[in-house]
Each structure stands twice: as structure tokens, then as C-alpha cells.
Amino acid sequence: MGGKQSIPETEDIDSSDNGMVKPLIVNGRYKNPFDTFYEATAKDLFKMIRSKDNSEIPWGNKKELDKTLPVISPPNIEKLNNPPEDKVQLMWVGHASVLVQFDGISVLTDPIWGQRCGPLGVLGPKRYRNPPCNIEDLPNIDAVVISHNHYDHLDHESVVKLNRKFGEKLRWYVAQGQAAWMNACGCKNVVELTWWQEHEFTKDGKSFMFVSTPAQHWCKRTATDTNKALWCSWVVKGPQQSFFFAGDTGYCFGFKQIGNKYGPFSLAAIPIGAYEPRWFMKPQHVNPEEAVMLHEELKAQKSVGIHWGTFRLTTEHYMEPKHKLAEILAEKGLHPDCFFTVKHGEVVTTDEVKS
Image 1: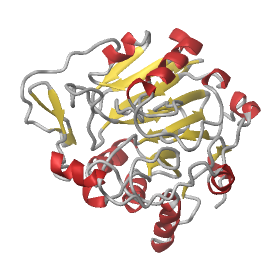
Image 2: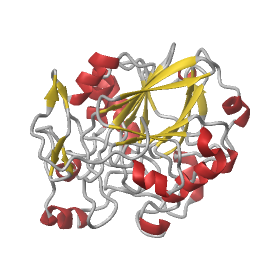
Image 3: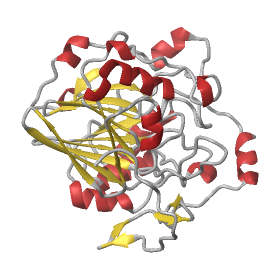
């Protein structure tokens, strides 16, 4: 399955199939089927913009940032070029971009190397921690999974550079409604899926299954395209190991269904940042406590915290996601290594993680 798929124009009020949650489609636009989602008003957005900024990012103080959020640059290229096939190896590029290697496959999530996440690469929030390497320095990548089309998760320049480096050898997995945009960027090998659709990927005689799965979020890149593309999370199951990428999401019951159908996972990449003020962000971004709930409901053996420490998107202290996560794990009596954070550019296997 690949290429462009059209978005149904008719209203779809059946949100389940054998109990599995499906997105709603009304007049050609997707809607969340979850009662935990609510849409912000223009008044809410104005209030959010005026909220007190507690992030305390030490802009311009490289020494302090190198102490609190070190970037390992360049990363260990030898390890990236020779990943162990019997383990899961990962490198956090920053924000929601993670390179994950297992069973002989390399998967990159939501690539963004740009200095700003916004239109034309010159607008939007500015990066305060740089990527650990250039796209040109990356090892072989087999597939990229895209959770949705917001600028901090889908960066045009990064897509173009990845396509230039890897060409048709690279498989792009996107949610329904996004293939045409990818094709316009020059990407040829695009697979477009809706929730619960599966696609088989083969490499060196091994079979991998990529599955688009639910998330509670929304899509928008221009003034007129709100929710004309779908958002999702991703499951990647290999012969021995499995990986889950949550993308960008608020808490919803969909993750219990994912865990029951496809879990347990060797590794899950779960967002832990960009969650304050809570009254505004709750429908679209989990906080550390909800992230741990996802970890448990997905039946993840190990999880890594993403979507923090790179762009100033919200108002919580820039180091709070990491610290809150550790507090929640301790409160729940969970081992600190089961849900961990890593440094930008750090190349580790899941069994090497020590808190």
C-alpha cells in the first residue's frame, strides 16, 4: 500500500470496529473519537499566550546548558554503523526524533534538524539544543515514521535532506492524508495508513510489520488545512524485538487497546514534555504522570522519554519533565531504569541504561 489515498468526505460516526477505536471523519476533516479530547477556543489560545513562562531556559549560556542538557556531538558513529542485532539500540536526536535499531533494521521518528519549528524554517519556536550530527552523517536508515504534520514533528528541510541522502531506499510511513505532501517533497517510497492498518516491510529475508495506531492529537500546517490529515502513533514489530512510537498525544483509552493487541514492546518512545499550562495542554500532550500510565498500558519493557529539552513550546521549567518522571516512577515503586531519559546524541542499548 503506498501513494496517495483520498480522505472520505462523508460523515463517519462509527468510531469502532470490533471495539477498536477509529478516527471520526466529518466533511473531509478528521476528529478525535475520545471523550478526553476537547478543542481550544480563540480565547483559550490568547490566554495561553499570556501565561507566565516558567521555563527558565538559560538562552546563550552554553556552559549551563552543556551541564544540564549535554549534547554528545558527534555521536558514536561506529556503534550506529554496527548495531547489535539481538538488542535494541537508540540515539535521541532531540525533541521527538529518535533513531532506533533492532533486528537489523533502523527506524527514524519525526525528523527535525531545523533551528526553528515553523513555516519556512524561519518562524516558530527556536531550538536551544542542537542535533548531535548532520543528516549527511547518519548511518543507513530503512524507514521513517511520521506521527503528524505539525512543524515540530515534520520539518520540510529535514525531509528533503533525508530523501536526498537515501532516495528510494528509504520507506516513509505516514498517516492518511499525508502522502501527497511527502510526494511533493520528492519522496517516492511512501506508505499511507489509517489506524490499525498494517504494512509488511522486508529486509534481508526478515519480515517487519509497521502499524498505524491511535493517538489523541490534531493536524495543521496552514490556515485552511486543519485536520485534513490524520495523526497517529506507530508500532514496529520485528522477528525478535518490537518498538512503539507515541508521537504527540494526550492521554486516551486507545493505548490500552494498542498494548492489548500488539504489546509487550521491547522499547516505547513516549513524550514527557510540553504539558503546561495543564488546562490548555491536557487534551493534546501527556505530562510525566500520564506518560508513565502509557508505559504501563502499552506493556512496554523499557520506555524512553522524548518531546522535551529541545524547543521551548510551553511554560514548564525546561528540566521539569526529566525530574518529574523520576518522581513519578519512585512514587509508583517502579524501577528507575524502566522509563529513562538519555542525552542528545547518546547511543545506548536498552540494557545499558543505568539511572
